[in-house]
Image (tube, rainbow, N blue to C red; front, top):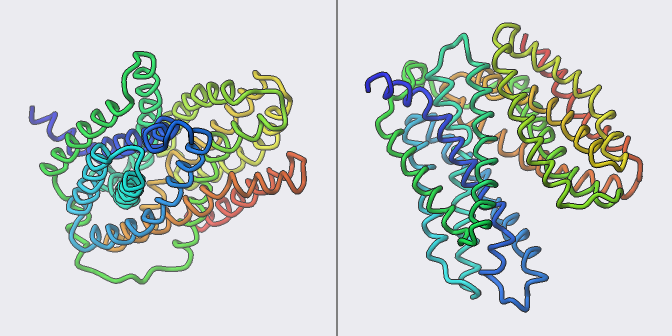
Length: 395
């Protein structure tokens, strides 16, 4: 029992990230079903698009939560910040279940719930990762980071699978939110009984915001390529390919789920070797691999065959996963513990949303302006070279 308690304390941050990705995945995947509850059946053709707008606008609170809880985590501790962010997400999910349907007030309350959820989520991603990294073995930081990413992707896959299972049974998708609430409540209780990392206890009285330009720039480039490496294969490709080939969205979405498995395998595999060769060294080699794989991947996906599409998407998932696996550990090593939480959470939130989140829109506009798939490589190469160069500062 004592061994289990110690194991939970060390890995509660990994579990928190997995549950956050599970509930976040539910929110995203359930948008088509949510439109039926928020809008009248006669308005169904516009309901999904309005939900996308509703969801997108609610992300305004993501960087705000990162800033607020990041300061709290550096000032008062990782546990209080993580508990408050988990509590806010729990409240938001419960509040969503109480919102009235097909009314203007219901849509406003759903928007408020999503905003509160993203406010907590913006800080939890960094807080959960730091709690596990700072509790973990200093010599295995890359492996811990890879496990954090692996279980986060597992949470997304489980969210998709839960909704598909409920749909097959003919049950309401709202049951999935009860599962998310139960899991998050379990994580909340586990964090209550966990301990503050000793590295934070020894350093948090230092105070101060002052950090160097190079760590800030490295963190921004790594977080940006983190976002690009996820959004290109799993958000942009499945939609744009259907406009330039005969492939359907159903087919590309099905292979996206399959290639998330490849993505997860590359994350896990990277964790097994990254600490042996060095985190910065490994990530720079992953950048070079992405330089080579991206033009081949785009050529394969534009071929028009379902199998070449699957192969091309899988190559991007492989390269992106290898780079992303140790990224949490790399970003944590850039800053001292007394400023680590606020710096990483704010920069990660801005880079991941502004660069990664904007990538599908930017690439779509670029392809409309210059309809050649090589132009899409330029956007990826720009961030790959930026990350490669700034990682060279962290030898």
